Amino acid sequence: MLASPRLVYLLKFAGPALIVVWLVAYMVSDQPAYNSVVRQFKSERDIFITDFLDHDVGGQLDGSSISELCASKTWTPGLMLSCDPQSGGFGQVKDAHLNCIRFAIEAGAELVLPRIIKRDDKNVANTRPKNGGGPYIGEFIDYLFDYEYLNQTLSEHCPQLKLYRSMNELWDVPQVQSARKISLQDVGAKLNGSVIEDMNTLSEQIKSYIDRAEDPETRPFPIRFSSDVISSVFPTAYGNPELAKNFGRLLRPRKDARVLAAIALYNLHKKYQLNLDPKQGFQHSTFPGLHLRTEADATPIFPPFDDQVSTLVELVTNSTAGFAFVATGETEERRRKLSKKAEAVGVTMVYKQDLMLDEPEGRELLEQLTWDQRALVDYEIMLRAGLTVGLSGSIFDWNIALRRHSVPGADGEPQSLATSSPIQHQDRYSILLGSSEKADTLRATIWP
Image 1: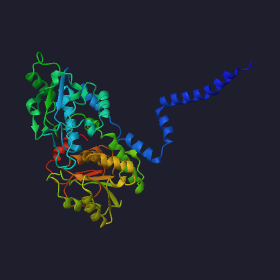
Image 2: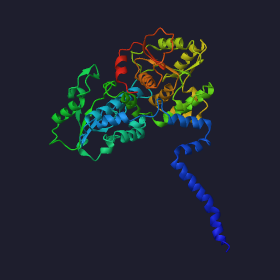
Image 3: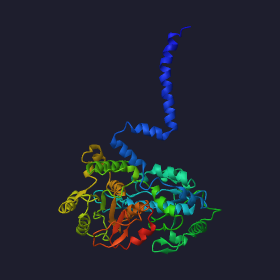
Image 4: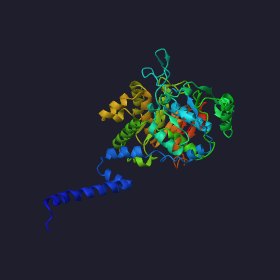
């Protein structure tokens, strides 16, 4: 019996449709195969950017030590902690947020994430602008960091710690609209400068203080305690070494800044034929990355502009690369001054703005970012330099140096360096110059 025309018509389209359904099901179940197929249809540039975003320096975060830390604490239902907003640059804000998160874990409390005080972009030295005559309460964490990544990572590795993006999420909980102050001094923590000397008893000290301040039998439920900004407090050498490597990676720069950094690095890679592979994080023998810290907000702990310029030029004079990437928030006029001095010794200084000259959309997005957000682009590029040179008084530079120090091979023989400046930190991948009094504290407390 011959098939009806309608059945033939249906079979004509059902066959290909079933094949498509099977392919989609196969690709979804086999992610590596799916990615391999998709890559074939991407440009070299798009593949580079994707690999950059998918591969962090030092590999993916290992959250097992964070899980271990959270599981070791006693968590109190209804107890909340918040911290005052932090001003300053990326390094300062990251440090304050991480210290606040760690304080909440030690307390066994839920956490209202601190806000970030946005500096005056017209006067970057003004890090705490006023708003209508009153204090400026600040921006959400998304201003600098990837909140979704933080929330997802903590949900997986520290589910005991409930996060609130801001007090806005608690608008209908009247008990927590006011808060009782708490500090490390209040709880009796013994400090050496700003650094806690004995971490073994800290959780119990915090809980004892809270119970003395507010009787568990009669206090409101829930209840919120609020801390001032906490910086450079927790000694990273305490506990599991893997925690020191991974805890700081809870806070990842916002995605648009990372995409811009990927585009800039790709353009650098093509212009100078660097043969970079972003899946490898960074290659030791590629370009040098330098940090010029002379902007209007730089404190007197940093050398003057002319001194830093002379040091950087001295460092690159014998560079075999012929160029160096410079991370800086300096004005165009001062960048040109550095470039001119470097050109006199045959070296080209490259800035993030230079790497966007042929990227109209990227250049526009970079210009739309605030001064501190643009520093995130510098940070991501510097992480991937062959050798970085920074300043021992800069929390930004310590974040870069210690993050790179966790990469295998960092303890190999350091590169020789022609400089008259004192060296505070040196490994195979990074060097920090200067004699800042803050260096030892930063070295001891930074989660990179």
